[in-house]
Amino acid sequence: MIAMFALLDCNNFYVSCERLFQPALLGKPVVVLSNNDGCVIARSDEAKALGIPMGLPAFKLAALRQAHPIEIFSSNYTLYGDLSARVMTTLTQWASAVEVYSIDEAFLDLTGISTDALTRYGQTLRTTIYQWIGIPVSIGIALTKTLAKLANRLAKRSPQGVVALTITAEINATLACTRVEDIWGIGPGYSKRLKTHDIQTALQLRDANDRWVRQQLGVVGLRIVWELRGISCLPLELCPPPKHSLMVSRSFGRPITALTEMREAVATYMTRAAEKLRRAQRAAGVLTVFLMTNRFTDEPQYSNSVTIALPVATQDTAELIRYALRGIEQLFREGYRYQKAGVIVTSLVPAHQVQTHLFDQHDRKRSERLMAALDVSNTQWGSGTVRYAAVGLRPQWITRCGHRSPRYTTRWEELVVVRCER
DNA sequence: TCTGGGGTCCTAGGACCC
DNA sequence: TCTGGGGTCCTAGGACCC
Image (cartoon, rainbow, N blue to C red; front, top):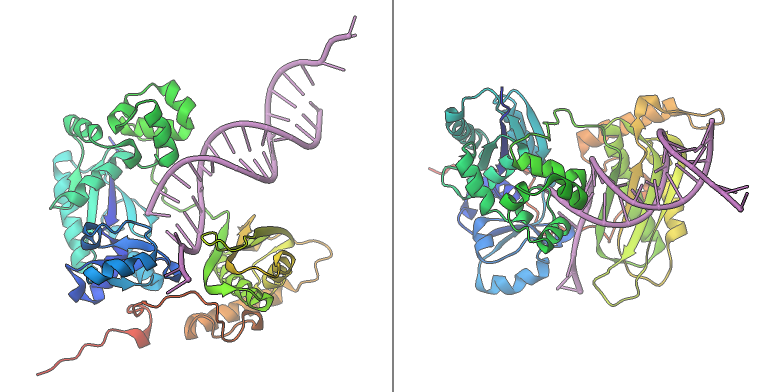
């Protein structure tokens, strides 16, 4: 049986999440900003029509807002994550296999559905998602993931929101008018190289010589070419492979100059990373701490990192904070205005398979119980209810999020209030 | 004043081994 | 004088993704 893939993508996902609870925003230009309200990471169609590009620094919106009533939101990942989970859960009822590819995208296995029924199937799925959750989606269907991605691009522009790309003539026509940089997996580097060899379109790339492609773009590029030919090389990944690394890093709301504040920030990020580790049931064997000044200014620049091999892999917040602080003290130099810091944990191992050693002083059982209690408290009463003193009491450097909407679906005290008047 | 925060995979080259 | 060949592991860096 010939495999068939669908790519379902939530339209302007973050904007759609905001609109779900503020329907008055429908039809208006809306943007969502990155962490720290730094730059634009999601745009409504109306915002795109105004020429607002992805990644536009937020301060450049001010001029545009003089002329147009653009609505601005800070990122509200709690809300987006919850709505994403609802979409993904719904999908599992619709396909034999679902790969959650990102917060707003999923690949579906549609093998076995007859070719002429594919579009109808997609449309029913799309309607269901909109009725049940309220998020508009686009669906592209084709023989390979890479072609499904292209079909999805067409679907976004089609009124039905669903495109099945199964007829050879249509595939060829689509590839002929697709630029190489719009192919999934062809980034700026590869597309530049392809263009110097006068390969401009997906069709030209598909028909290129295998050996040449292998030499120019490696096996990754060759897989893409085969996928464009309709030969599936990228199977669905049904259970996400365990993570190898994990990072927590934020820009500061204002520059940090004092070590005391830097210590608080690093302890805070380390706390968050330890929580992520425990949720994933992993322990970290190596810890990297880094800091940097703002590279967009003329101020003196300094960035550096230090990597610490932990004697025993751990997921204990206190222990990790201890090493992280040691690291940051080593890195910190007076006289700079720091803009960002972060922690990366690597060499992750399953938490129950940690290799201890003879001289290990740490009471691992006690630590496990303590962390469990910490997590239960903070889940029940809100993040940061119980915390280590190192994170500080009232941080002044905290990430900006001046336009964040309520966490409508996950916090009782932030529920939507409906008033009925008679 | 103000420019995100996560991840993955592949490759080349060096160290080391037999 | 003449100095192999093949393998593994690790790391850094580059490419890509959302």
